[in-house]
Picture 1 (tube, rainbow, N blue to C red):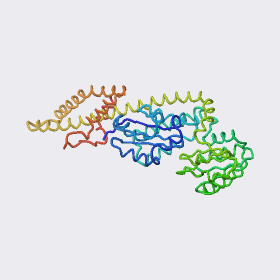
Picture 2 (tube, rainbow, N blue to C red):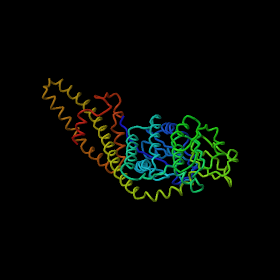
Picture 3 (spheres, one colour):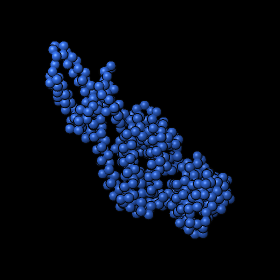
Picture 4 (cartoon, rainbow, N blue to C red):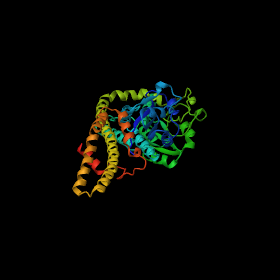
Length: 437
């Protein structure tokens, strides 16, 4: 069956929401979210991304209103001004901006591109990425890669991990300090490297899987130790600076575990939180993602000129993507229209030839003449609607395109009429006609 659809998206991110609101959005992991969205009526494709400072979902639906309804309950408990709803074109632009780092807490940071690629892979495994989202997500990743190779948007870039170290350095002297990092994933690894570069004397890496922590500790240029996550309270007691990014389902450290920590600067990058905010005391400072805004604002100011160049890049790439969609959707509708007409023509042509044969044997030339007449009639009758469909695509008149798809899709032909050629694509003469047009 020929496919067509409209993309709708929804975003809850650090731009408008706080960390508690982001944590409460969107159900479970990416695959679960995508599977749930695919189960809704009218949805043919779905994609989701969840990071420490954004949760977003996108669907390809039969029409814009269906997509909007499907996403209505994605963030039901969140205040309206913390939720951004994205129509078709806005969703395409937003995904490119996300991939390029323009929507990140740290402008131009590199980590989001890897997170986006992993979310695409997870959404594919859930069966959510079809032809339309494949085009969109491939384009977004392409833009993200171009932004980082053709501009200086990430020059001197701070990851969230290194931004956390910068924040810690404003509150305590890192020189000669002992640091603890909870979590040996990408965020924890970046934080550990930034701490080592920042002049700490020792780093303790705690992780649920100790070999992973050992791997991170081994690549640091300062003395480092790997321990299990169960040893996090002890590591906290020894640490002057603690950065948490475990990916656990709930807090790893609370007031009880940090009661004997002494003067410690704790920065929680977890989503959900790794450190209970109630653990803060006069000695223990607990910061979360919201507190990184001041640090990252300085980086944003430095990169505004590069961001403008990336914005221009996105404008050009978006125009190309939209033009591609318009051509594809128009050609799909036109192809469906010609398929239906070809089937009707072949059926009626065989009937006419059979009747003429009954009146006297036809020569090959006579058969060719009758067939040429049928072809000419189909071509002339469909010339005007073909032109109209292409104009509708150029004008973003999706209603007309979708109506044509429903009217002319091969599966809507008369019951009992067998297709004369493979329904997976237009007949050869249809392909020739489309290429001639």
